[in-house]
Picture 1 (cartoon, rainbow, N blue to C red):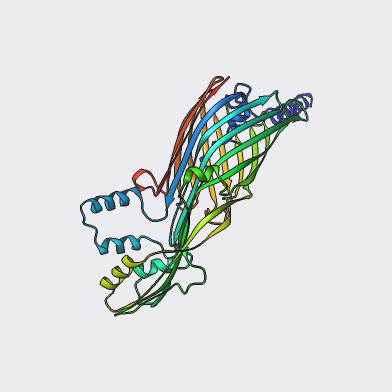
Picture 2 (spheres, one colour; picture 1 turned 120 degrees about the vertical axis):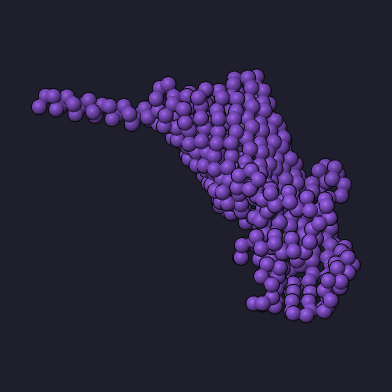
Amino acid sequence: MRIALLAAITVGLTATSASAQGVPDRSQAARVDMGYRRFTSFRVDPFRHVMIPHWGLVVSAGGSGSNTVLNFSDVGALIFLSDNDEIQPSDMIDIAGLIPAGKGVRAVGQGEGGAYLGGPFGRHFSIGFSAQARGYGSAKIADSAVAIVRDGNLNQQNFNLGNSGASGLVTADIGVHTVLRFGPFGGDDGMNLALGIGGRLVRPGVYVRARTEVGSPRTIRVTADSIVLDLAFETLLATDKIDERFTGDFGSGVVGDFLMRLEWPTQGFAFEAMVANIGTTTIKQLERDSASLFVATADPLNDLVDALDALSFETRDTVDIDVRLPRIVRFTASAWANRILQLDLSTTMPVGGEFETPLIMDVGTTWRFLKNLPLRAGLIIGGHQGLGYSAGFAFEARNMLFQVAGQSLGGFLKQAKGAGARFDFGFFF
């Protein structure tokens, strides 16, 4: 009986100790500061550097782009044919055959680059100032338009361009972000809480949008011996005098960013929620041009080419518009249950608007065989491109930060339908 009682007490104490101290004392991850333990996303992250526990200057840049149809091998083949003037109409038909029914064609891209200056005041408060240029772009050809080439006109004769179009935006941002740290709550092994809040002044520089005109017939009729096109297009342009657009009264906006991070360092677990790009930016004095195209011909090969050559846009007026930046809603969970490995799962929720992005999940691993030299690898699931891969490394020291990573989107290397890259380089003082 005494032996059984002693065994039960020992097991109970061991279980209590394990629940309070889930990560080994000598774990590399347990000795890494919260700022370095955050998931290093390729995507826009306004709090990327303000969590770092040192005062310093960080220069960073990153970007990615992908499409839903062509991989790098396909693009290389098209470039080769183009250089040798050997592209045939059949090649375009073959490309259209690669587009899955109902998907259409999509291409997206984003990039950012700039500098950050900031650091902590004690253990509980950090502040950072940033100046960056950001760019967003997207393009879409509706499946109803793709079907003209891909499916032919055996099943239907009427087509339309739907919501086909393209848009791009480049901005200059100046931001201030702060982080408040609380805890641990409930003892040394309790939860730590970090709350982040910040805002950015956004000045638009370049803006381009081209699409079928709202309310136009947008009709395409293809029969066995004729083609009828009745289309109208609209463009918005703000690209001239770029230097003046950043300094003059050509519009601006203020957007907000928020972060909440819960962390149990000795348990080896963290949960984070972030919402960013809350707000709109006003773009003034956009030149609105329009054009219409009507063709009814039994000789499409010649008449259609002539009509497209004669297509011209006329300036209608100038307008002011409000553009909503891509809203970022991201949830991240991290765990480091042994002395080397950290696992991260990040989900970026879908956003609408001109630069829409579907659900994206990032699964990442960080290997700290050496405390200051993490190695990273991961998977990207979702988005427009499907499955992707990422890899990178970093050097994290008291006086310097350097990290670089790359992505292969929608496939691996030549089979990829997109790519991404990112680097951060900082000095601390």
